[in-house]
Image (tube, rainbow, N blue to C red; front, side):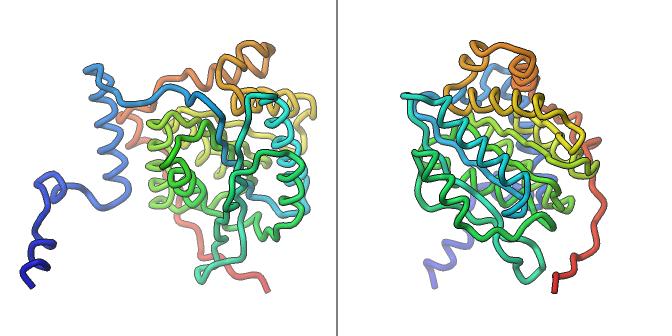
Length: 281
C-alpha cells in the first residue's frame, strides 16, 4: 500500500497544474513555443536529414479517383528520391468502430519500393470517405516518428469529421510533428468548406501546407503540386528550390510561413458539433 500511495502522490507542482482538456493543453503548448522563440530557445528541429521516412495517409474509398491519385503520388515520391532512398508507411481507414467512426490502420513495415507499395494499396480493404477523424492519423504519425523523425506526413482525403475536442487533439499532434521537424501536407480532394477550415487550421499549427482540389481543378495544376510535394518528401526543401516553377514557389511560401501564434487560437475555427453518424446498412 505504501508504494501505491507513493505513486499517487509523486507528482510535481507543474504536473498537478497541467490542464487536461485538449483546448487548454494546445494553448499551453503554443504559448510555450511562442516564449521559446521570443527568448531564442525554440526547440523546433530543422528539416529531417538522411534517408527520408514518410507516412502517406488516405481517406478515400479504395476504388475512388483519390485512391488512384495517391498511388500516383507514392510512385512519384520514390522516383524523386532516386538513389537517396525512401521509406514509407501507408495509413488508411478500416471498418467503423462502435461509435460509427472509421478506424485508422497503418502498415507494419517501412516499404522501400513503389511497386511493393502499389500492390499493397491494391490489396487492402478500405472503408472510408465518411466520418473520418484526422486526429487518428496525426497521432499515429507522432508514434511512428518516436524512434526516428519523419520527414513528412501526407494526408489525402475528401471529408473529415473531428469535433472541436478532436480538432484540438489533432492540432496538438500537428504541433508535436512540427517540433520534430516533420512537415505535414494536407490535400483535400473535394469542395467541402468545413473540411477546408479544419485542414487550413492544422496546416498553420503544423507549419505545413494545405491545398484543395476538386473536379474543376485542372489536371496539370494537380500534377505540378504532386511533383513539388514529392520533391520535398524525397529530398527536402533544397530539392523543391532546385525544381523551380509556380507549384514549387507556392509550396515554399507555405513552408516558410510564420508559426501560428497564441493570439490566433481563441479565434481559430471552431466546428459545430455534428450529429452522430448513422452506420451504413
